[in-house]
Image (cartoon, rainbow, N blue to C red; front, side, top):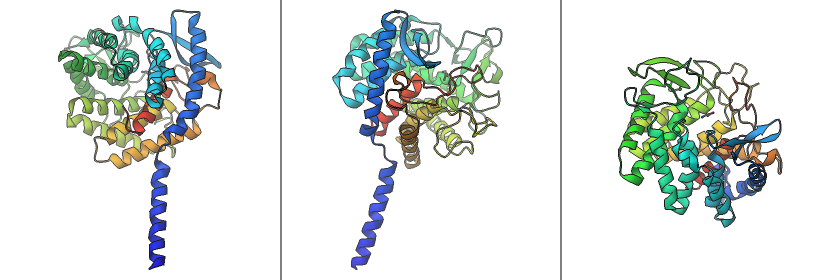
Length: 393
Ligand code: GLY
């Protein structure tokens, strides 16, 4: 009898250990992360002080900190990171720099030349509004949603992504653009004006129809005829080739449809997010540590670059999806695994890399740009995933 009890106890203890091993020790992960961001903040303060146009850090170029101007699509991630550190640690020391770097983005609320306003304004002002309720932030969010809405074409039913390469594309829409819809959903909640919501839903529905292959992988770019709405080309800009699955694109899609389900409760979006998760998580090209290579179809796998940013976005998306799906356990376990692997194997050495947290991201390999580097949006979604791993936003 005693032996039986001991055995049961041993089984229970080992099960607890197995579950615990999958859990994320957020407090432990935050110790080096905070130290790194202390350094990134110090370096960024110094570098932006002499140049009012450069407002936020983006990556390392030849080992040097590279900063960006406000209109760069990555300009809102650093302030977003500072808000997440404030959120996660409750340490008021993050508040002043979070506000300072957020306010540098104010002119962007009127920027109608980019589809990236969601990234720029929602990661910065959106998190700031969530955490402080500052009403001046609310009006920036609403104005940014108005600016973004100007890029919507009702005939095609989508928001235009890029204006560049006009000789190649007439009305290009990239899968990344799903991420900007969150700003529109929020604007409807703040104003009661349903036009933002309707644009977001139209974009999500049209993208669902045109961007995905049978296996639920996503093209990067779809080009529309702006007069008829007809699809005239499908392919890639940042992936390996037109029929490949660029890792970060799949990550944006997963996160984007999960967020759309949260905002609409439309089951079609939930199914889409689950199908995308299946494509990613059962893909034979996904390595054991679940940090994808930069493109799922690179024939050089495993001798090619990883994209830690895609992994961080996938982890964050899976945490949210686990709150809605019957496959909750699997998604949460996988997100924990990714987050633990990022923490253990993909973080900078203390004091290295000018203070970026994660290493091994790939920005734009075909352009030979930002290959195997630290990159600000990897750090942003890493911190967001840490927050979500313990039930945060
Ligand atoms: N949205 C641009 C990128 O993911 O690189």
